[in-house]
Image (tube, rainbow, N blue to C red):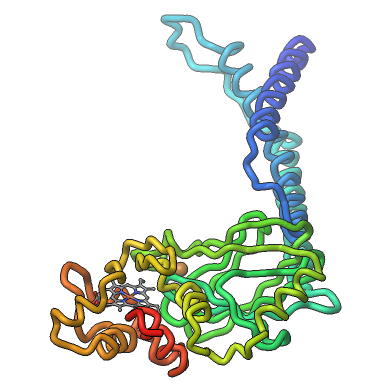
Length: 337
Ligand SMILES: [Cu+2]
């Protein structure tokens, strides 16, 4: 091949590589990493991206050069010269991509296995998902329950996850790891936060009308703050007391607030009816307010609030909440103290 052609193609390739690199580097495609697992995932991402940029630049340089250099003059209807295979070229374009793809595969497998290791002293957290809320239980820390995910920094958290209804998916974008929750089986995932702060956990599997609201706050705190939080959460026994504060926390933890507006709880959910005037609604239905509300929670399909659909409010609260918890919610919602 002529030297001039090689120089021109190389120049084109360098220009293309620089442009594409700018697009890759200047646009913040990924959130700033907040976990060890995400650091490794980012490594795989950049490894694959560098290879892609090199291959793209090579192919585009040859293509653009050929389009310009071998363009046929107008009116030229003759055939091009007959070309036979070029064995060296064919071996190169088979072997080089094979090596690159295998390298990406090997590195991914390595990172996946590393990201599945929990370290010596993981924090165990049970995750319960249901349309459209997350609940967390800390089995080794006084069985503390929470609707907010609180994690100590620099310690692996090992999540054991269950879904009460349909497939959901656990994802904290800044922490990289993602795992489905499938009804009937327990799935696991490990996350090791590397910096304190507030992040969000989102459901990333379309799971029904409230899917977009199925989020939870993730708060990563120092080890001391975590111990203090567990202590504060355990004081008072966690047995589903009937105090207003507990009921308010339960209303949030059980996901009610994601679907219902209720002024005392400060929630604004719009998937279900506003719960501010339940006493009036019960009177209209000619029922005792406490019975009316209890029935609405335990057996939501029995009477459907006008203008709303059956099958949206989860029918499982009668099983997932304890009788004491249901009592406290009923008292909270009817304004009885
Ligand atoms: Cu979901």
